[in-house]
Image (spheres, helix red, strand yellow):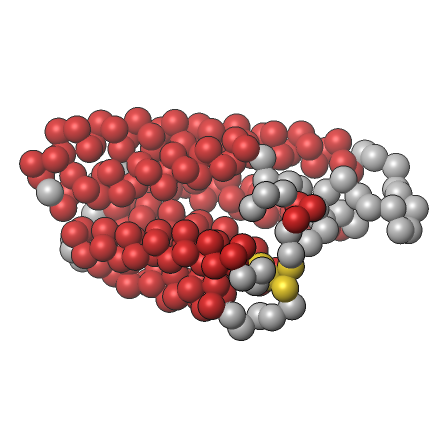
Length: 205
């Protein structure tokens, strides 16, 4: 996307980019079942298909000016669901500790509470911070690396250390971003109420 000024939000809900986003969501339980059953290679195939459709729906949405509010909600929702599914599947098999799951899920519950507080004060959600994007990238990279070592034991000697390094760094950044959001939410709540017709400094999409 070249910027907010050039962003075109379409009113068409049912279009190819949104259908691809829905496909990603449908594949989440398939991914979780395969992972929980130890079918790591097939789980990686499903994850690869999901990653490709994630790139493709964004490309088509920009190319065809079919960016929709639904799509803007589905994409981050699918990303988080895949992270949760990977964490739960790996923890179920005792490949990652449950405290990692609690840290990641707890942070999103924390942000949900912040969103409810902001809504009660009449504000929309805060803009996505770059720390949150980096944290999500780290987790998205870490969990497949851990899965890769399980699917192909000959690669475990390097995929596991790299995967765990990204997982721990991602968890740290995830909460760091959460603290930044909390500080920003506190600042926004303390702002004087704006007059009607004046836009807030939070996103209102």
